[in-house]
Length: 186
Ligand SMILES: Cc1cc2nc3c(=O)[nH]c(=O)nc-3n(C[C@H](O)[C@H](O)[C@H](O)COP(=O)(O)O)c2cc1C
Image (tube, rainbow, N blue to C red; front, side, top):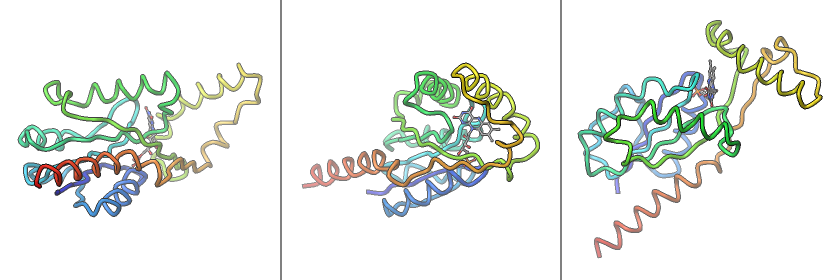
């Protein structure tokens, strides 16, 4: 079975996941702007980060997917949001809903991976965009009776929620497809 892992990444967290996944699966890999014809693959996995409630730059993957109706499509959002929290789940679902063309929605099975935030490496624009979520975090800390983390401190920090085991559900899904294909071929 031929599988390809396609990714987009600005600060490298999603690229790291894509490299781990392609290695574990023995799959091909491509950046989203260089997505090849997906008709040559039995399965294609898109890994893409969420930025301000959106999944920017993923259109080339879905254009190729539209031309490959037989290819199984999996997607994984990468973000700071925690899918175990109700508001985190809703934000992830909204980003997916905006990014995927209507006719392809039923074809994509989604997963979520937690990424990271590297404030010292962020562009000034991205730091500016992060001020709103940080002020929300400080508000929640105050409501819980905690001392809010100063924004100046947060801006020095590097947070990385990634773990290789988070990819296991995606790997299991691909392995199940491989097993089914092998059984069909017998
Ligand atoms: C400006 C900015 C906005 C972000 N907005 C969101 C968001 O709306 N939801 C979310 O879950 N994560 C958000 N994140 C976290 C990123 O998705 C996370 O850092 C991800 O790991 C980035 O992947 P990359 O390093 O591959 O670009 C944001 C990060 C930045 C820098």
